[in-house]
Length: 320
Image (cartoon, rainbow, N blue to C red; front, top):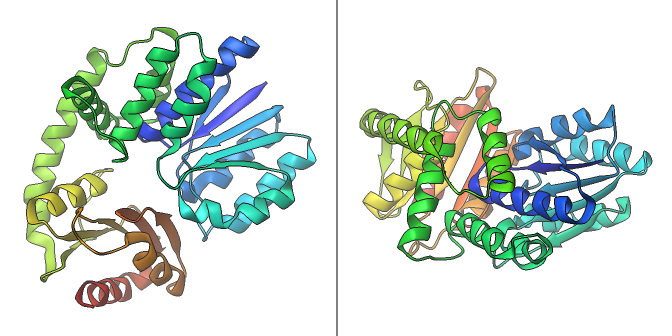
């Protein structure tokens, strides 16, 4: 028995599908698929402890410093049950935990120049029964994570899949079905993807009109949005990306996914000198939270009681 724990975006799911396809060819099995965000990775790992698989592959789920102690304990418990673990990632926080992972006996495949799908394309696609299809699928994950470009067809497929995965109604069940379609039917999109992509576009347009009324600061370098009183339904990253593209500035959207936490999502345009994860992560840690991401796309979370202080610190970061 094997399990794959994947991030729920296109990079994570595409890399998971390639890995699962390689398993099917070499072992004749379809690994169990779990989908997890970095801040709840420990919960996914706990679900595996009751019936430990022989092998766990974690793909595109970065280390979140705020929950790393819990994640580390779960990993240690799995290793104690003789579970082999392979971690595939491109987030610097995971690389910085590599010594801890090595002490636990966990293997790490890391890239700083690509993403999880880059590793899947280079390492695992050749091990599948259709290397061309899975290399193309992995390329979609790379395009979605802005580490590769593609022709018109690839850009269209990436756009539709990213939109569908971000639709308000796209839950874990849909994402798991999408991975199974890629593995068993070798189709990139279907009617449900098209419908959910249209749902996403409508939802994004409505939220963008509302969010632009919540800009609390805009300077030469960037803008800051306080959307704590708005339900964004998983659209925060897309809103920040759209604002960064439209304004040509760093865009940070602050929102409350629940009563306990406040989240800041940051997107950085290509020509801006601002490392999102380096700037935001220390602020979150100082305020009792955590998070992570990449140089041009990061997200952090803090206790709701620190929301006002988070906004103040983010504004200071944009004016330095």
